[in-house]
Every structure is written in C-alpha cells, then in structure tokens.
Amino acid sequence: MSNHGCNLHFELDVNVHKVFLPAEGSLISESPHITGKLVLSLAQPMRIGSIDVQLRGIMKRRWGSFERSQTLTQSCTESVIFQRSWQLMRTTVFRSRIYAPGRHEIPLSLAFGSGEHMRESVDGVEGYSVSYLLIGRVTRKFASDLTCHKNIKVYRSHAPSEWYSFATAHTLDNEWPGKIRYSISIPATQIPFGSDLCPRIQISPLTEGLQVESITIEVVETHHFAPNPSFDGGFLKRIDRSRVVCGKEFSSTKDRDISTQEIEGGYEVAPLVALPTSIYDCAQAVQSSHFDITHNVVVTIRIINMDRHVSSVRALIPVVIFMHNVDTIQLKASSLYSRHIIPPVYGKHQEDPLIAERESMEDQSRTLDGSTLKS
Image 1 (cartoon, rainbow, N blue to C red):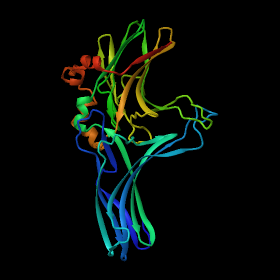
Image 2 (image 1 turned 45 degrees about the vertical axis):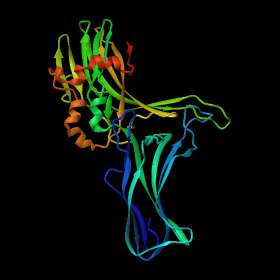
Image 3 (image 1 turned 60 degrees about the vertical axis):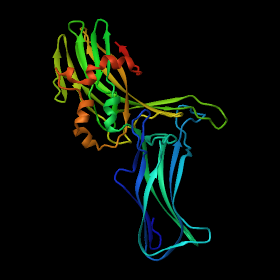
Image 4 (image 1 turned 30 degrees about the vertical axis):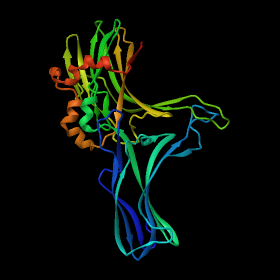
C-alpha cells in the first residue's frame, strides 16, 4: 500500500505463497512456515507505534436455499475460520519509534506448527471457497494505519520423497458375460496435481464378431456439500455435484497417442490423459466436516454387437489428486514421476514394484470399485 510518500508491501521468498501442511501420517517433521520480508519505504520520517502481521482464513459458501435445496443461493455466507497474529515491533502506550526516510526491511519467519486447525484452500468451486490473506499492518501516531496484503494458498500434501511410499496401484478385473472380459489398471491412485494419468486397459472379446467401437476415459470431480441450516431453522439434504475435469476418447487402436499391444485373444491399450494445471479447472481432493472433493476415473467401453447395435460398460476407480510444491514441467521430466505415474515398457512389468506388489496392496486397499452395464 502506498500513502503520501510511504509504501508497505511483502517480499516473500520463492514459492512461500503456497504453504504445505503435512498430510495425515506424513513423515515430514519440519513445521510449515512463511519466510520473507515486510518492506516499509518512507519518503519522510514517521512515528510508528507497532508493526504486526496476521494470517486470516476466510470461508465463503453459497448453497442450500430452503426454496431450491439442490441449487445455489444468491446470498453468500462469509466467516473467518482461521486467524493468527505475529508482533514484529511494538512500543509502550505513550511512546513511539521514529523511522527515518528510506527502505526498512522487517524479516518474517511465521511458523504454523502442524496446522491441524487450518483448512485447505479451495478455488474454482461454484458456491464454496476457502482463501487465506496475509495482512501487514503499521500503526502510526495521529494518522491512519498502513496496511498491505498477500494471498496465500494452504494445502496438505506429502513430500515428493514420500510419493513412492504411499502410492497404491489399483486393478479392476471384470467380465461382461457373453461379451468381453476387461481389466483396468492404474499404476498409482494417488496422483500429483497437474500430472498425467496412464491407465492400462486390457480387453478380450468372449464372442466372435464383437468389435470395440470406442473407449472413453474421464476424470470426474464431485463436490459434496454438507447440509446447511436454512433461515427458518430447517436442515437441508446433502448436495452432490459433479463435473468432468479432463478426458480422452479414441475409437482406433491405431491412434498415435495410444500405446497398443496385441495380447492373446484381445489387445491392451495405455492412453495418456493429462490433468488440468489450473486450480480453476481441477481441484485437489479435500475432506472436511461440511465439504468434500473426490475424484474418480470413469472408463466407458462401447462395443458393436453382431446385430450392429451398440452396448457399453462403465467402470469407476476412485483416485486421490493431491497438491505439491514441484513445478509441473520439472515433475513430468523427473525419474520419480516416470516411475510412479507411467507404467514401464510392455513386457517388463515384473520390474515395476507397483505392479509386482499389486496383489498384496489390493488386500490393504480401502477404495471401492464398481461397474455398470448398459445394452
């Protein structure tokens, strides 16, 4: 903020505008914190009583009207869900400190502990948001205060070094009686935000003359809104809304973007599906008492029967999209990414620890899978 020859602003260290709190069960021992400087530039001497910094979390929600319980309301409810202050300089009640003209830098090192009472930032979701504002304040004697602010993102995430330890492969095997047998494998159900998804799909026709018309892979994001008291004291139903954040459809195994291999009695495909890199197009997984965000990989296989009518099977696999502090370009170029997100070269699956340990990992998996047939 600039005010009559004075300026107050933050100069934060690189990437600290994103704060990563340790996820539940994480091995990270270092407390998350914000570092940098609060800079005060003066053109003339100024009497200052105190300098403080505050981090404020604000939740806005707009859903659950009594008249239309499944739609958003026009009014917005705003509440402060987190607030913490740090005193950088303070004088006694009847004294003040005179700052000379020039540039004054006040170092910042703001620690948050475990952050157990902080909720994750949420953007791009209609009707709900969680945002954090870092506010700097300089109180002056006989003059209005100087303030400045900076938006801060807060996420819970594992460190890149832990990705392998908690990554879990998932395979869905099923049979459509009299039509096809199919298997859908995902190397890791925990997926870094902005990365790629590479499911492996095996299809074996059970009847001669059947043809695969197309295969569609979609990542569906669902927002679960908890009941919200209405103006007359009623309690409304839970609201669920879904959107497709990315997808890919192909009708030919000759597609250049699809890795294809013929197997006995059928074939195997491994399409690469890129996740959005914007927080407004795709959100991370969130769990709270009143609002959740979940993701599912939905695979739809359409087949052409001998009488030429089209049938379809739809399979669903839950995944977790989590935030991280690694640049997306660096992430996709890293060996860590290629080992845990993209399957190895065909014929070498025995060298992939995620695939090799799949059977034992499935016994411990708490995720649910399902499939729907339509003909």
